[in-house]
Amino acid sequence: MAVAPSVTSGEVKSRAVLPAVEAPVVVVKQMEQVKPYNGTSSHRAYRDYFERVCKVNHWVSNADKAHLSLALEGPAVELLKEIPEDQSDAYEQIWAAIGRRFGYLDDNRRQGDGKTLAVFEQALRTIHREAWPNADPTSKDSALKRRFIAGLQNLEMQQFPRLHAKGDDFANMVARARQFQDAQDLAKTKKPNVRLAETYDNPPEMSTNNTAVQPILDGLQKLLETVLEKQSRPNSESKSENQNRRNPSP
Image (cartoon, rainbow, N blue to C red):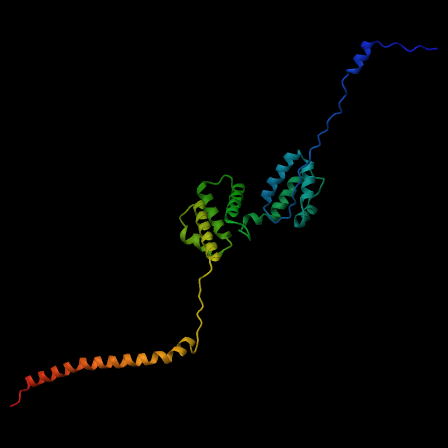
């Protein structure tokens, strides 16, 4: 018969205080979702946004191309048919094709419906900075003013800076245009104070009171005639006396 080995009290205590093995903690990082692009906005602004997302998600090389292909939709996705997927520079070819197809949106930027002057101003500055990064301040200011006036939606506002802000720089021109827009908005909100007057062929008040007023008017007319007659008598008598003095009797 086998005898179980004896366990001392010290061994029991050492076994009881052994630390528990903790399970490793796995952190799952959620990827930033890419907004789609359909060609209705600036392709330069979208590329800046897309490359920021690539940095956050740590996408490189082929992953950039794959996620950009998935982000395109509508007319923009049709451009992928012209670019072979197996080429090493497919990523840059996609952006070049997008620029050729939708670059006119940046070159002919207009204010658009629902866009404020502040948003329009910032869009023009961004486009000009990306297209001409080395332009001198004078030519930059002149180009921004020209594109700003041409892109305004309101025809009256287009004439206003041409007449009243021709010598201003771009920032002051935008400030004047915003003042003009505020004045227009204020004029639209105010309602004209118009009172409608009713006209009558025979006003009821006059028809009912004519019988009471007419005798008073007749009495005043007679009194006036009497006063005028009395004033005319001394004049006629003085005239006759003057004639007698000028023509004495023989």
